[in-house]
View (cartoon, helix red, strand yellow):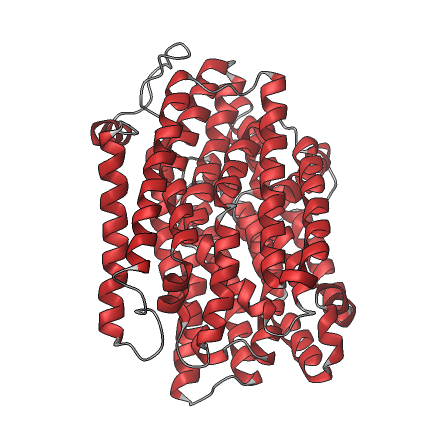
Length: 534
């Protein structure tokens, strides 16, 4: 399997989904703004978003894929099908019971995830209603993740990567309908959006179940039983889900604390949506395709190949992540202004959201590296260690958020999330190095500092342009076409600076990138002499 090509496939569909997601978020920001209805909607959507990220973006697969692939390759298709049917049957029953209990206990759940809403009965009741409408999405997406794991084990990444497009298309249609009906920041707008989320989850499930059937893996319901294979999956899957979903867990914690500050949940939500674009395109995509590849190499005893794959994954990820990080920190106001400042989303909201975006942006490399390091643990069927690291990171996040939000408000919450991500990354990397399961090669040690230098030079150019001659452009009252032209000039100019400086100091070469895309990986050479293929 060509790792980069597979990652590019996932990234391509993710790009389409995230672009549509931007359209959705821009429409949502303009219609709902950051007031009480927006706050209730953001908190209500955080739960299904968390479970979508926990399951659909690789956490469930961290346990399921190695076990399913082991049966598929070692015992044959029949054994893998039986295992899949056993897991699916237990999941359906367990998830149904969980959703029913959660629907009944939703007021108590809301007191936990948004304690600040208790001061407003109307906002609290709306958040409960919205959460009840959207909570079945959790069950649908968990089963979507299951079928995604089946398809990924078969080497088929397109359908799982394309499924989220359904959600964005449905929400865009819903928002367009609400606008046509002249609805604004009203409860019925938020309720309609939550209904579209729940229905989109069902449609995604139907699509991936069909794709699994079409791929020759026709899974049928069985009488649910806790077989040895199912028990092992859950022993691995629960800590794996916690470990792989640390970013979303931290965001939920941030939302809980932010609910004590007016407008803060919405500011953090929209900032999160912006940096999720590079994270989804780079970190999530790379993590999804890394896990099956690392699992195969470990079973074959190919430790040299495993380290080669890790190093090239880090190199390619940082080539895209570091300039994205610097751009988010250098020009957050311009980004948020162009993306969201319409309708009920005000200039003050832009400033507050951009502050959170810059704070989140500082953690982007850490978020991506977590997605690259954790598959090595999961491929070894070790989900407990990443869970412990995640637990330490959560403790850092809670402590940092509580210590700082009284002084710098929502920005402190974002900074605490970033700090916790770096703590998690360093713990994961340190443990892998100690175990002898990760070691940087000569090429990575040479390329990484140069990529950072090229990114910093690009950032200096962006800041200089925003100080002069583009000072005062990204404010209300300036022509949209002029702002758009200046924004595109910043993006294109930043790219030219980065790639120009990168070529000059040999941080990368376009020839190497072409070879990565065209050639499948050969047998990896010795450490320090790694070819550019992933």
